[in-house]
Image: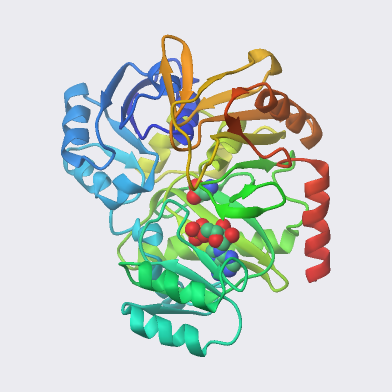
Length: 428
Ligand code: AMP
Ligand code: GLY
């Protein structure tokens, strides 16, 4: 199989690694900036903007690729899948209209409400900032404030936690887009990712990401500082009933998209808040999570190339797809000052003796020397029979990095897990 991987971050490195496990799969890559991990696996690399649809399609045609795997959301919004399809190339990734599930938060909530899909918080969409501001003025209680469009995971502000009423109003004033205001959900977050072929859906192991910049879940939101998964593919604060409900929400969403003429093909990412009242949808993403892809893809024991074929032929079946029963812990190394004022150009060295997998993200590599850029730098993934073992491996790798970088030590630790379990018990 000849396949084009679009995107140049840690997530796309993990996708390329999973594809490369089949020695007959030829990987081509388009990315904005050279990712050393991806380019060392690829037969060809084309450097261009991730939303340069013309550049990407003509490179794909020149190389004669048959399939594309779209990593990030921006090219989906730019209509990359529609354009590749016109050129006879099938993608793992939704068309522009189906990708609105992520790229337009108002579309997502309205779709859930219209089709009476469970787990939709109370929400209101405002296209005019004045109306949003007067709603905030009169509103009693907390609110999640979400710009309608893409924000790289950094656009949500919680009134009542991160900002007060005046801060919420100032934030809405600063936005150039419409806004969704919704009920603040309280609980524990988890991610459920699934392969989807338009009709059939096959779930992957549950993962918990950590969006906040600092230990103890404080500080600004980031793209994700790290994540973990458990050997049984569940999380100890998600009951069987919660899991079944989350799965049913995802399945109803896939069915609704198909019914309305926007069949969803690709990776569906469900971000849930497990509340006292069961799982509610924080958002859907139209792609793998970053870092969550790094937890599930190394455990995939089936051939990702076969799954790509099945997705594009609408023949996906759960019996084709298995994941190893192991725990994973992913820790991201980020530049000093990330996310508000990240310091680029700082040299760093890694210690490769830990046995962790290492994924290149936003990092410069020159003559074997690494230095930071402005976003997440490198991800280390520990895999083991227990969470403790997986965490030990990831921690050893992350703590072995020398340079002006930092990471969250608490991700994947037993004490953090105990806190999550206690929080859920307290809510129920
Ligand atoms: P998103 O960009 O939608 O992934 O949101 C970023 C983060 O904001 C999520 O991971 C949650 O921690 C938080 N968040 C988003 N929506 C809500 C909500 N309705 N209630 C509470 N927290 C939320
Ligand atoms: N880890 C969150 C995301 O990929 O959106």
